Length: 403
Image (cartoon, rainbow, N blue to C red; front, top):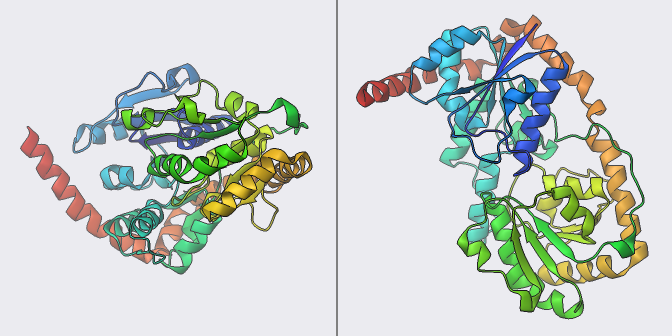
């Protein structure tokens, strides 16, 4: 039996974010393939994290800059180590390479943090120029090079890594958030009411989207559809989020949704005016799955449809966004076609069977020809060489200092 260790900065919260759902998918996949799985995190468990032990998974609380992790590695002796985001690889990757040099290192990127940051900075500066030379980019791309394989949820980001950063395709694998079982049903247009937005408020693009809805979209949209409400859901809302609650304007802040499926299914249209971000948007995939159309931006729909018609409308200008929201909300024929578009996108892009056999083949190839695979990635070896010295000695210095 193969053994895999997942290292993360958080515990798994599938009901809080798309990232949490993604991690649970990976866990269940490896378990279905008979991997012996253990999970380590530097975070404290929250009331919303799932009990991995109930899935038969050993859990470990670990610390950065602590050589006790080396002993844990030897004890677990995994064949594969999966890092949840590049920051975790920075902290623990060199230790894995030092203690278990033959363990396969996989990075689950979730999204390209450097792309999200570059877009955020461009929005703040009201600029169309993206700066890819940030410190975050240098750190993140280095982590991708150091790993044997990086999982990408966005084919747009796959192309970006290869063209802008010259990352070899051989160390990248496109594996989006997926759907295993899907039976489309024809939803009833008249049984769905109001607009909805849903997203974890720890994620800055979600907070920005809510501000755009409040200050730019809903001010006019509410007058064009005087009986419609806008319901905002999201995990970890702060006081500044709750302060936007305004029943007189039919703008409701509800906080965490007990069931994302329920709130999305009950809404007629989801609004997602996403101005920056990266990866693919879990909320938009859920809309397709649950038969609820959406209005979003080019960035919101990025890498989610290829050339297929969208599950609603894509609009970047606020005036156009409002017009499309009214049309989608009011026109049953347009709405029903949007639902069908979403179903087709799922069938062609997000069914797990599309990717499963290729993913297994890549994992088997790595296990069979790891040395050959690494020798073809000189930049990764070079970065690993320097990281094993600079990061290692800094970490050991901090550990001694903290004694």
